Every structure is written in C-alpha cells, then in structure tokens.
Image (cartoon, rainbow, N blue to C red; front, top):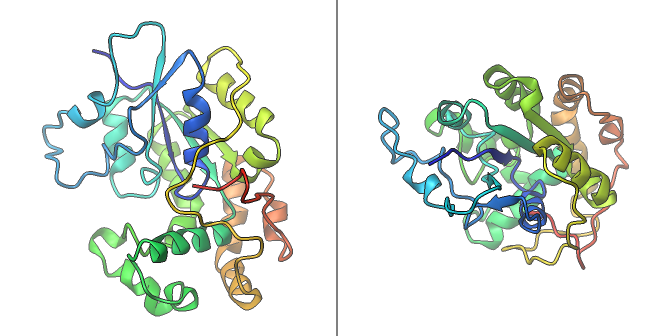
Length: 263
C-alpha cells in the first residue's frame, strides 16, 4: 500500500472545502472518503508507534493511476501535526490557502458561535482575555478559541519550510480562488503534476454559513488589522505573494454568498 501524495494542510476557513470539492472532479485525483480525516492532529494516537490506519483507510487503494489527497486545515496550525505528516511521507506535497487573517478570524468565530462552541462576543473573543484561553491551553493551542492565533501565518510557513522542501509547498490566496478560480486551479494542477481539467462550478454547501458582505465593525477590524500587520508583511516576504492590498483598511473580500461560501 502506498502513501497519500498531498495534503491541503491549511488554513481553517480559508476555502479548503471548496478546493477539496473542486479536486474531487479530477479523474486523476482521489480525495479521501471524508474531508478532514484529522490523521495528524489526533492526540489520542500513540505517536511513538503510529499505524496511520485512519488515514490509509480513507482511500480505495485498488484504484490505479491516481494520486491521493486529503484536506485537514488544522495541520498547519496544530502542534506536531506537520512533523507527524513529514514522518509519514517526507515526499508529500502541501497546499496552503491563505485568507486575510482578520476576515478569517471573524468567519472562524461565526462558525464556533453558530455551533454553540463559544458564546463570547467577537470583540471579547479576540481581546486579551479571550486570547488567554488559547495561551493557557496545553501546548498554547486551542481548536476552538484560536481566532487570532491561526491568523499568524508566518510562523506556520517557517515551520512548514523547515520540514519540507520549498518546492513541495504551494501557497495560494483564498481570495484569488474566488476572483480567478481558473488560474488558481491551474496552478494547483501544475503543482500536483496532473493534466489540466476544467473543474466544476462550486456546488457544495458548507456546514456553517459564515459569509456576510461587511462582517466586522470598523473599530474591531482596525484592531485586528493592527494585530496582523507585521505578520502580513512577514508572510509576504516568506511566501513571495503580493499581500499589499491586505494592509489596506478598505480591503474587502470578493466572495458572495450565493455560490462562494468559504470553509
């Protein structure tokens, strides 16, 4: 039995559900039977003798002539997940979708409050007391309350680059997936080494709708933008992506709710 070839490893609320669905249309790609297998962030597993049964069991290994991929966007953020992934397959390719961190944080909060996992107002959840819920968690990471912390992309990129050769990592802007999906999907197919296909229109339904046309109050948006400014600049330098427009307080995302929900 082989190994999974590529992983959509981040970021949460960055369009990973959309990309997963697009790639399921490609005849040369087999995606996992479910999105978010959570193979490498499973803290109940014995990582001294990993079996990878959960991951390997999410694929039909009798199908020839395909590459296999899996999408769990917490991998880029969760402690030790990328290290475990590297140990599983050091030749794996990683795709990371990067969304403007202020919008990502609000979308994350909307999802968690809709699910009943958090009851704090957004301003409090991203404030010092709210962020202390993350800082005081084991390993300094939290699955639910990490609205701000998951938006610091530079440390995640430095970690990924320390574990995998740069040519095995593709970085894409989430907003480009929406504004120019053909170009983004062509880049993904080139990266994966599969023939170009015209992949289908988005038709999935996300578990929790988190889109709104101008979702963040101006003062809260200004606070978040200030928190993320230095990281955006560092992320641009590390990634080679032009993120200048993310520094504009008037930046708005190009998504629309009818067919462009983000997950």
